Length: 247
Length: 247
DNA sequence: CTCAATCCGTGATGCAGGTCACACCTGACG
DNA sequence: CGTCAGGTGTGACCTGCATCACGGATTGAG
Image (cartoon, rainbow over all chains, first blue to last red; front, top):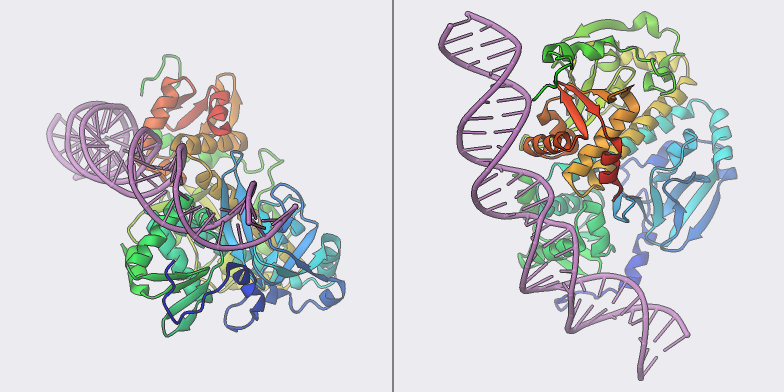
């Protein structure tokens, strides 16, 4: 990992915490699921806010979540696992996302596991409180429906990304392009993405093996498309990524 | 396709129509999304019921659906396509499914294409009518939320099926097991699944090539696991399929 | 300071399945 | 009845990537 002079070297352990500093309405345009819940008067009084360390499991696939988790700071990965232990990460939830929503509505067990990947600040509302809150304000169901709708869209996008690509490089390129659009910071040197994920986690996101992620990222760096600096990815040549996706 | 003597030979063209005969509350246990809409008084008066031929496109990926489609008889495939023309079928919607729901809620374009694969009877409600109907009966939003929740679950299940399998045979086996559970008819000879899909369509469902579907189905038949009779699949040895999935 | 754990880089190998290229069959239709 | 289109079966080939198997670098714990 050749750090070019002048660039700041960032410790990984620092990076684990970076997302913590985000303001989750920094780019006002993106409508986050939790914004739908903002109107819910009474929410403030029953939620309990707390800090979770990296690696905390909020709820696991198959068990019923105790309630609804509103992610305020930090990120969490939503994943499903097969019997053989293979794990697939369906999405990285960020500040503003609401976890455990559909389990709260339908009496069903969670379909996926939610695990923090940063230190997180999370507002929790127990299922009973949440439901009775909604009962009292029935038009809020529309907001819930919209939030679910967003979840659905997100999942479909990710599914498309994975299943309609014909090479691992293309999948990775798509993922990076998405991220750079959604949360990238434009700098003179390119668009910076604060990733902080291991290659193994990236692999689970695009459903491939750790080794191929390593190799492809290596290729991208050698081609000058990307620069990796300890957890931060800088896209220097967006066009090159787009070409991989195009055809 | 060697038809063993004594078995009825069924014309393909007949099979295209078979789903038409289903009663969609035949097995009362399965809660279909549209059942959530049953309570909606006023729906009867504004819906328009009509018949679509096989191959009709209700709405296409990228355009806004004109309204909500409630599938009464027949089936439709929900698919997404890549720029290069590859198509992925996300699900086969059956009687009782509601199509175009999230687009009706969220001003957004449809994320997928809906195309009939049987001759279908479909109730249509324009977006405006639908929305104002909901406005008048706000608690119905809960039902909408539940319907979306179901859609989400279904998509997640299918995604799991596809991405956590490590062979095409396993994917196909999972698909068949699902179908045989949900809509299979138990007979002395095994569980019958009225499929009526081409190998190419099956391939798009499990994200593989037409040829591998042909080969795998061939293998299953040779092993005595399955019998194919012009569009009807009879599972003779469920255990064999389960073994493929287990490990 | 040592030891263990985790992450990253890289080569060698093998194979599942995509792709291409046909041949065959059946039903539809003029 | 000939022709045509769409669906199915099958062989040959070739490649992307999973897998195995390392070695080296960092980090954190004791």
